[in-house]
Amino acid sequence: MAELSSTPFQVFSAFLVFVGGSIIALTVGKYFNVSSSRSLLLYFWHTAFSLVYAAYVLNFGGDATMYFLSGFSGDLQFSLGTQGVRFVVFILSQGLGLSFLGCSLFFQVFGFLGLLAFDGSLREVTWRKSRGIRMLATFIILLPSVSFWSSGLGKDSLSFLAAGLALWSAINMRKRWSLLVVSMLIMLLVRPHMAGMLGLGLAGSFFLQRGIPITQRIFLGGIAIAASAAMVPMGLNYAGVGEDAGAVELIEYIEGRQSHNLTGGGAVDIAGMSPPVQLFTYLFRPTLIEVRDFFSLAAALDNLILLGLFVWGGLSLIRKPLPYHLMRHNRMFLWIYSSAAWTILAMTTANLGIALRQKWMFAPMLIFLLISVVGKDGTLSESNPGDGKVRRFR
Image 1: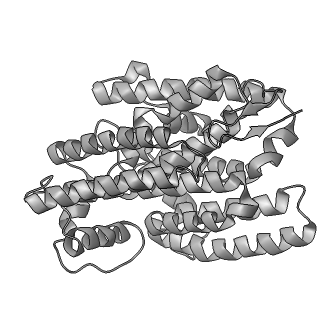
Image 2 (image 1 turned 180 degrees about the vertical axis):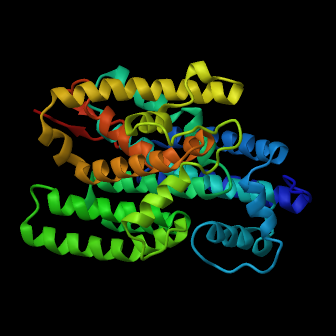
């Protein structure tokens, strides 16, 4: 049975991890144009959810305890997916002597960096907008479901980090392409199939993005396709489909996944749902009428806020010209990846508990795209609260 910390050394080492994370918050926050005070506030907020998450899984069970206890087996070998996370935890627990609490705090730093990148991205796209929209962006960053699932020991903290870095990279792809490569490698470690989608989204954006010379499109798109060609088979093997799977095998896999994880309070029967209902179920349920306990109430309130943003953003998308949605910030990449991820996960996830965790692998991109088109951009000289620079817009 895992314990938070069982020796004075483990308590002290966990404290050192916390202090190290706060130093990282002060240092890295500047890169994402987030002030030191705001970065520390987000770090403390995220750490609090990490403690809640650790206490929850110790009392009610969860994958985090499995990852930690598996480190004591002594027969671990590195591979992608679950085994990769186990291997990292093995190094932390057996190599560095960290307790369950120390490992949890270490992993929450990954999720915090993803949160910081998410926050920096939203501030980048809203700082010319009204105060109300900027407050909405901050409110979304502070949603409990964002920090709770990304603060635990497991795949979700790393996949959320990958999503945040990919979003930040897309804002200025020419200068941050190396960070996107890091993002894809992190996603490859924990969820290879999602890394393949990132690669396909990047390839599609290079071929379809306007304003890039045709030679560069072919060259960069070819590199992205080559990377995807290497990652997609890994993802198919990881998912259990097989790297040589054809259309029939994929359909059978999807049908099989629709009847998987149909036990427990979060189970839903998606096999008989139409695709639009599957998409709604995956991203916006549970709703307020489905609340059963405190955790489902918190999730339902978060989903209600997201639904409101999606309705508002959807109406704004209709009113504004198409090039606006695609040209800036390499939005083609964000649209392709987030749409593909949402569709595939909605078709294969029959448990709302899993959906609540895994939707944050692409939800930051959708939130960024939608909040960027709501309201009106400012026309006066304004200071970006993240970097203190004054910029003038026409």
